[in-house]
Length: 199
Image (cartoon, rainbow, N blue to C red; front, side, top):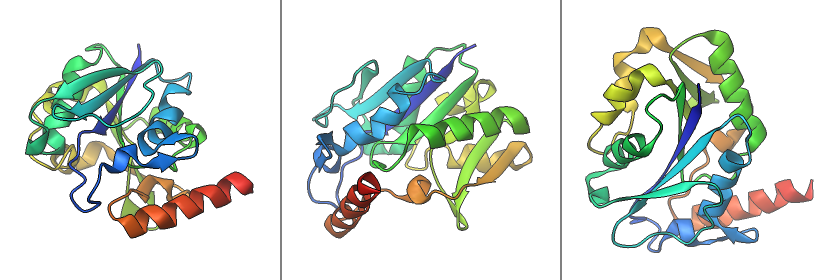
């Protein structure tokens, strides 16, 4: 049984005004930083990055495979469907991650996978101080439901329809809710990331 991580990187960056995933971060880009904890984690067997068809962000895919969503303008659900289609159909679980979350670390992803296994629920959603975040862990049994994704809500409707099979897992790391949307947010998060590196 394998675990697949799907990194959604097909957004339009409208609020940022530029391709936010290609902005500088450490020695690479924002997307490099968001991808690194997934490709570096031994527990993850396969990593799929979903990008836009008109222009792809600048990044180094490493061992990840890259697939193009020509209908990315339809929203996150469309990219999620493309990612699941490209993933191993026998995956035990899918890790749904976002390309604009560069503060995520491998140790936290490993913690979420371990908690998902230990708790025994089909869906695990990380929560920081009352806010739901990413990455979300979903059992492979939800593959067909994920393939039916559409619009701009990702797996939100799937989680809402399966509350009895969902655990909201409290974490102490704000990285699960720290995504980039505006130039001010980018500057603030870049400063925070630098501070973490200096600790």
